[in-house]
Length: 351
Image (cartoon, rainbow, N blue to C red):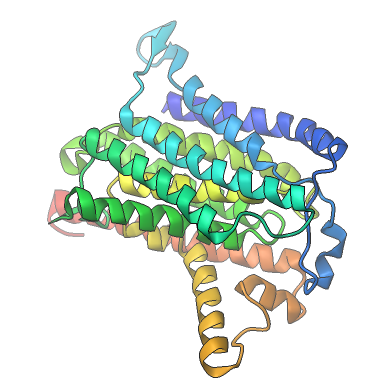
């Protein structure tokens, strides 16, 4: 428990203190946000420093590493204590940083071109494919379960090749889903704190009940999740509406990669659909909009992703953000409840 608190506290302090420094540097370099012309209500955001996700990446890595060293332990008092690093923990960091690196290059291309278009779909997919391939290889090498899972493994073994396809699907889908959701000040940072907070609970519960879940490195994964919670909350301090800085693709792609990595490593593949239900809803709104327009020539929403639809209907930005946070929290609550209910079924034979 102390390790989780250290991870969260370290990343929180780094991001809440480091973000103002990043804001000043980004302003000096004239690295600002480009706004879609259709979003007239977002004109005031033009030029807002972007690529702030870099601070989150630093905070998460620092928080994760710091959590492995402490000077106090319950039962033993003061002293120097270390927690061993695990392959699963480093894999989670890799998924987070790998997708964040792709987002960084995307942001940099936007800055270089001075427009809201970054990497081409081809280069972005190739980058995601490389990250997914290395992640899958590392997971198989570390004996991570290749069985399909919901709240725990189902007994359906995908084998290394199908598991590799699952890794590619989950990493790319999660990264792009969070990226699509990142269109309003604080929406992703606030909702992300809820979803990663759920994974702190899931990983810690798996650590406390190894005979039920048999997840290697569960505590390490909990430290990673806690570090992300601290980082997004520290960033949210400056990213809340009206945002003084935007995380950019650097942050949103990293958060998506981190979520997919946690789901893969904690054997909760399909549970992520519920825990990250807000991101699924936003992505589905885009898919439906594109399908409807191409097939029927009509748009379902005034604009996709769906949060912009509500803006164009006249909802204030803060109203959309808070209501979407509520939706994210409700889905997280149901997901965590399902996880615990399954635990009761396994250990007690019923609710």
